[in-house]
Image 1 (cartoon, helix red, strand yellow):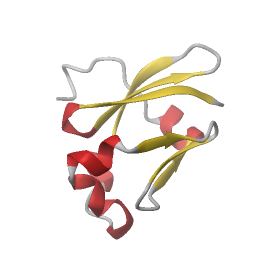
Image 2 (image 1 turned 180 degrees about the vertical axis):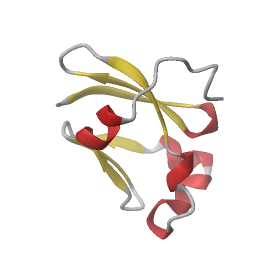
Image 3 (image 1 turned 180 degrees about the horizontal axis):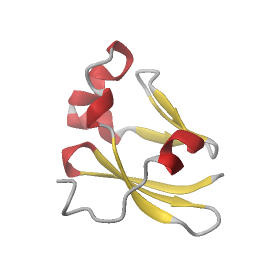
Image 4 (image 1 turned 30 degrees about the vertical axis):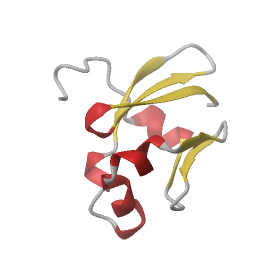
Length: 81
């Protein structure tokens, strides 16, 4: 699945729209304790995101595949706050 758009939200949540129209939210907080994602605790770093189509990537080298993202999208932003 290809990612059409990615928008960073507060609290380390991403709004993701997939090419086929599926839209949802992805929480990166569970990843923040790993070394490669730890720099994303800084909100400015978290907001510097690049959409590579089949992955998203940050300047620090952290990345997530579209398959991983699609498998963990949720629809209710309030329930996961």
